[in-house]
Image (cartoon, rainbow, N blue to C red; front, side, top):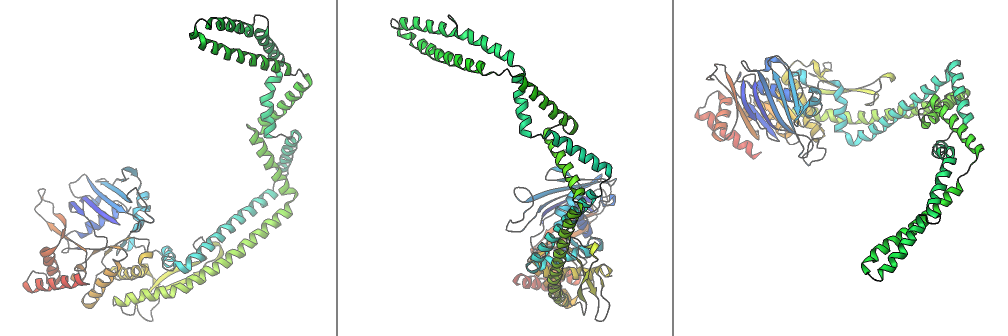
Length: 554
């Protein structure tokens, strides 16, 4: 939802703030006042292409800032910062270059389009119509009929992914089975060489830990023996500490302050006796075994040779061994492996075909009811015998996607008996906007687009159709944020917020300026009166007040 829009130097707008209501916001003004400038600003904020012509004459750049709140009103599915809001800035220089920032950080136009742009639909300009792109139609039908379609779609996508995985595994096995004789010989050589040594990760770690001790056994024994002698010989460290302790114990009888030193030396005596014993055990445990030393050195050399060839780590050697073993097995047991993978692939294909049929059935069941409801809204808009048609056409197997095995497209039949044609072929901008409006009303809360901006929706409309259009827009505003640029008083009076666009020519630089401001009370009465009769006569003012009062009660 668009919370606030700040526009500077866009077309004829010098500086304006636009704060639409969560429901229905109407924008009115005389022809040529500059309402399209507001639409241009919104387009910039949702990732549309920037154009140097957008910049107000005489200005170095145009700036558009907006705050959006994305997600449902209850907070579920919110996509943004801590408060659920995105602050977006788009700056366009007079040479056409564009800069984007989101939440204070630099961003790309693509990021802008994929975040806030996905929540806004511009309705009325053919090049921006979400509805006009057939690729979007299946998503609209699925969203509306989610209770029926979603389980079938989930099952289909799971089957589609499983079939893709099975196909990739079959290709891998077939490729391995086609291995050249040189590659096979190399794999056999690698497997034989590694298996001859039969390495394990634990063994290599153990050898690298133990080998230095065995290689230096003699030096270690000499060091341990010398240390033991220094501790244990007469007048050695143990005897010296014991002698000092005896002297202090005698002195402590005369000066009790020496008791702490006595305690310290007592602990030291015990520690030295323990060290003496442990050094002796270590010395006596050193094994001078030349045969074991030679065996470990040879083993270490063999393991390190494998690591130089297939490493650098022992984990890499073991992985290489597994790879070679699989390659050899794929050839030696190729027929069985290929047959097994082919059977799995066939089974996955059968499951996918069944899931595709169920998905098509679910959509085919939902489509008539969806178009029936859309056509009811179109009839409400007095579009004559025009109707929406849903065409579900099976695709060739190689065209299946994760969206389904059939193409879903909404077609438009302008009158009874005429051929249904793609929506993009609708000639009238107002007509296509009303089709969009009917679809959006039926979609309701299931529509992923939260903000709808309508332009030209009232083109060629008047009389009872104008009242019907106003009612439909008001209904749509119950589930969406709706912004409507309108010339119809019947629509204008239904707005929760009403903005007036007017052009003034008294700017200091002599360039006309578009002013955008909210209106209420008597100012709104006067604008509605102008829309009704082009003037502010007492009769038109009275009529405007009556219409506003009636709208407030609905």
